[in-house]
Image (cartoon, rainbow, N blue to C red; front, side, top):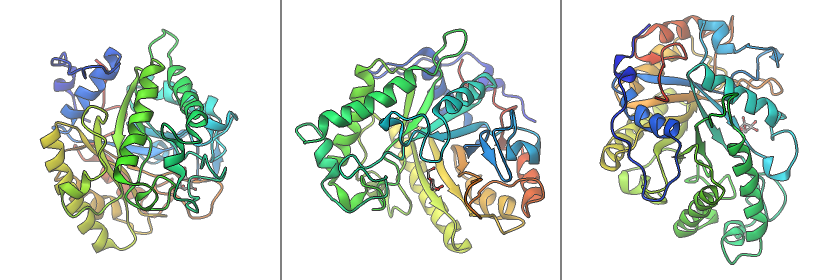
Length: 358
Ligand code: BMA
């Protein structure tokens, strides 16, 4: 659809952090995430090549590709439960499969993002167990579960370090832990730790990755919406030395409210992104079951196309839960509109993004 001459150009001077480890490919990805917003935005889908509506594990299949003919340029996956040492994540996807698909997405030129719905290290229940407000405190340095949690972080580090192509290139990944922390539905949420504890959680995570030689990560800060101003957006921000990309998660329940919220949040994000020199993105969004036949071109596109985001990502098309999908599949009511969205010059799919890593 579009040629990416400016992405083809050899990339500008790198911007290494004083003590951050980053492979050249990872550094180039960061630089290109900033540049890509001049051309449009990438489209992402969670668990895209793993399962969809009515299928699971078919080689090369993707609901998005079945509808528009191309893969999403961003794919996201979740590492929840890798910390327990098992083979599968909380949505019963094997880590081996995730690794394979991350490498495949890199080989086709696209980007990968990883979230972490990590279990509650104090109670042994899941991420959504908010029954105890001392969990974050218990895993920080000096806390009773600190050593145990470092082991959990090491499981993450090992996985990240294992993401290598056949030629031995480590695949860059956007890591997005501790997301939606402005709500209180995860054990790291707003009412479950103080701003300084939340920042310390990030610092501990980042430092452990550095210590373990993880040099293929960019880090995303990803609160929920609806911040009233940039100070509120940044209230728990761990700092420019840790975070590489600024985003937020925002879902539609009411059309007008969603459009207003997206608009306000993007205005703030644009301002903060400029001030901190960081790329910005809508790290999760969607309208469950997309019951609106023109949602893509009449709700989502008109708002987000006015802002310099590098990507927008919709959540998964669950195969095991009824009515839990956010991308169209053939025959779905918004499928034809999605094709129109795909055809817009600003929307960038896998074939459109070349040279993200050089
Ligand atoms: C949620 C839902 C859950 C899922 C979790 C992690 O938003 O999709 O069913 O377990 O994300 O992927």
